Amino acid sequence: MQTLGWREWGSLPELGIDALKMKVDTGARTSCLHAFKLEPFEKNGEAWLRIWLHPEQHSDRELMIESKIHDQREVTDSGGHTELRYVIRSTLHLGEFKQPIELTLTNRDTMKFRMLLGRQAMRGHFLVDPDKSYLLGQPGATA
Image (cartoon, rainbow, N blue to C red; front, side, top):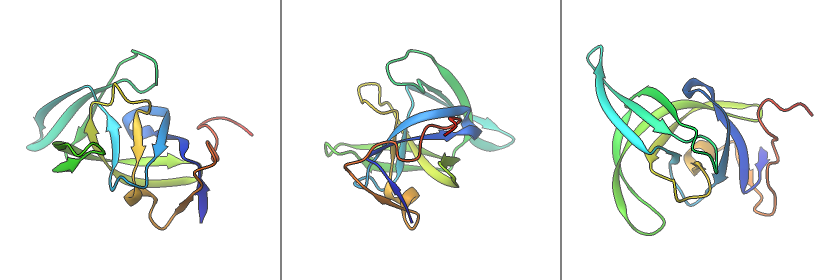
């Protein structure tokens, strides 16, 4: 099993996100991605979502992506607030790890990290060392 630090670099290439800082959150069941605007629409008879996000911390650069809606779920955040969130699926690249994961979508503009990596995505693949950071390196960086 590979070890992660409390924060890591990853990517979601299917969503056009080549590099993304994420907080590793063993308290979160499902991974969560920042989205500041969501617009549901229909495509070929299926429910889809236009998603606007700021992929980089401390940047106003906008990215608009489209994804099929996988589900909608009530999620309780760390402050105890419950919110109905859209859920999408995308392949996470984290070091050599590549696997489809579920992502809930919510506005994280006031949060330091644009993504939380939840325990469903890590289960059976990773251990977490809370004293370490960025153990897997940055996507696209050469050693």
